[in-house]
View 1 (cartoon, helix red, strand yellow):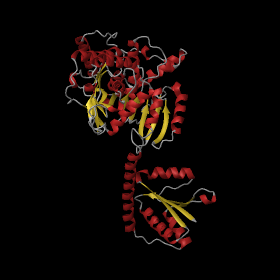
View 2: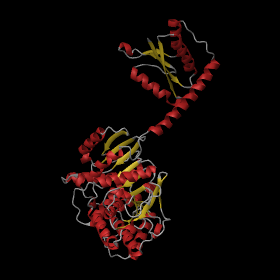
View 3: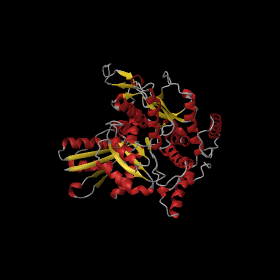
View 4: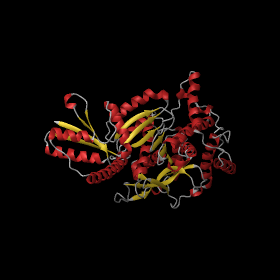
Length: 528
C-alpha cells in the first residue's frame, strides 16, 4: 500500500495539477492512497516551516509531497514538490499529467474559495460548539460544593450547552481545589467539557461568560460591622477590575450568598462599569424562605406559592410583600384546574400573624443566616441563572437585586431587590404592577441602610447608625455619586490591583499568618 500526503497553498496552480494527478492515481490504482491538505495562503509558510522542522526536511515551495511509512515503523519519507511527484508518477506508474496552465489557474482559484468557505464554516461551528466559560469565586465554599452538581446536570444551561468550569480561590486553597476538580470530573457529566482551577491573579476570569460570586471564606473574626463593610472594597475592586479586563463583554455576573449581597453587587458595578448592566444579586433564597413560611401556615407545599416579592436589602433590612402572592392547587371550599390560583392574603385570616409573626420569623432568618446554607444558596443561584438564560415562567414575578434607575421612587445608584421578569436573555423590572406602593417610612429605612453600607464601606461615613436622617444620607450619597462621576473615586490601574493582592499575601507570610485568613479591612479604604 502506497500512502502519499499532498499538501499545498490553496491558491497554488502546481498544487492543483498535483492534486488532479493524485486523484487519478487513487481512482485507478487499488494500492494507491492520497491524503490532501489545503492551507490558506496566510498560514501556509508557518505551517510548512513547522512540518519541516518536525521531520528534519528542507523544503520551501508549494506543494510538498511525502510518503507515509508508518506501517513500516518509520517516519514520513519526503518525495519533494510538484516536479518530483510528476517524475515519480511517470517512473513508477507510467502516468503523466496533461492539465493546461489555464486549467491549473482556474482550479487553484476554486481551491482558494473552497478553503475560505471551509474556514468560515469551522469558525461558525466553533461558536456553536465552544463551551460556555463559567467561573466560580470562593470555589471551596460549601455553596460551591452544592452548586457544581446542579450546573453540570444540564438543568441550568440546557443539555445541549457544554460548559467549561473554572474554580477560583486563594493560593492556600490549592489542594482543596485539586480535590474538587477530581470530584467534579468523577460526576462524568455529559455537559461538562472541562473543569480546572485557578489561583493566579493575572488569569482570573479569563474569557469568562458567567461569573458566580460567592461569600468569601472568612477565617478570621471581624470585630465591627464597619471593618467588615470596608473589607469588601479591596476584594470587589480586585474582582471588578479583572472581570472588566479579562472577561467577555457579554459576561453575566451573579452575586449570591447571605452577607451584604447588595453591597458587593454595587461595588462590582463601580469597578466594572462596562458590564454593570449584567451584574445582579440573587434574592430567590429569601423569596424561597418566605414561600416556605407561608406554605407551612397554609399547610401546603412551598412550590404552590407564587409571586412573593422581596423588596430592599436581600441580606439585611427588607420587606416581604404578599400583596401579589398566589397559591395554586390549594385544598379549600373553592377548587379549580391547575392554573387556578387564589390570593394568599385571602386565605390567611390571621392578620396579626402576617404583620408580626411572619415578619419576625423572616427577619430572624435574615439576621442570623439560619437555614440559609449551601443547599438553598446554590439552588437560588442556579435557578436565577436558568431564568436568565431560558426565561422565567410566563406571568410569574421574580425578585432580583438590580441597580436602581429611579423605579418606584427609589434613589438612583443603589442595588435594590425588586420585582422583575426574565425573557430573551435579559431581565426587565416590572414597573407596571398595580397596588405595590411601599410605605415611605419603610422605603426610607431600606434605602437608608443600603446607602449607609456603601458610604461606610468607602470611608465617607465613619460608622453605621440606623437613626441617620433621610436628608443627611441623600446628601452624602449625591456627593458620593458626584465624586464617582468626576473620577475622584476612580478605578485602580492594573498594577495597583495586582500589587495590592500580592502585598496582602506577602505581608501575611512575613507575619506568619495564613494568607486566606487575612483581614482586608487593614487596607485604607479611603484610598481607592
